[in-house]
Image (cartoon, helix red, strand yellow):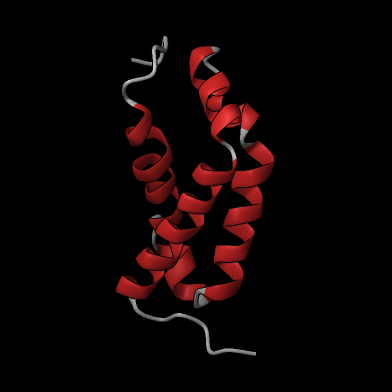
Length: 89
């Protein structure tokens, strides 16, 4: 088994990569979730699967004391869709 990621830079990179994959493979769900104001319900399974993958790859103390994965979800999935008509904004 590989060494857990123990630097913030590498943890952020991993979180952003996972969020990018979620975004890439779930465009339809993301658009539906934004237009119907239920994004996190639509992506619940994908986000939890991504969070679990992130948790298993990052050192436990780094995972527990940071919110890199949640920030990546917002930055990669949510902010990139600011042009979509939604009640959220």
